[in-house]
Length: 178
Image (tube, rainbow, N blue to C red; front, side, top):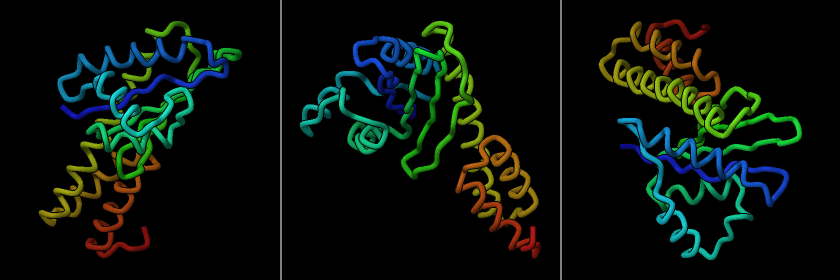
């Protein structure tokens, strides 16, 4: 299973446990998936200790850098604004592509986790479509590649890989102006 690094969601109040609760619920939900698993907390603590970091001072960039040292393929960064109740989150792959979770209002840590994991399903579908698009390009099935890349872009307009592969398919179809 692919491993996902899920640190505590950031909050404006450093003493709040809401971000930690949301992250723990997300880990539980991801752990129930057949294709993905959260990175074990002990592995994360050991890596933080090894590099002399302080977890409470780490931001999304540091978590993304740490991902390579804990064998994670994806990182989930999130924040909870307890004043407004809004939750923002994004998944990052090691190549730097991001998939942003649609911002939403938190009702409970479990509800927040369910929302994030539901959108994670959309992200994994988009990643699969990019992979299939790439395979279609390798097989010189240009129309199929274009279709799959277009579907991937619909799910995640910020996917550089989907746009790149789409461009390759269009070029091979002699349709560079699209």
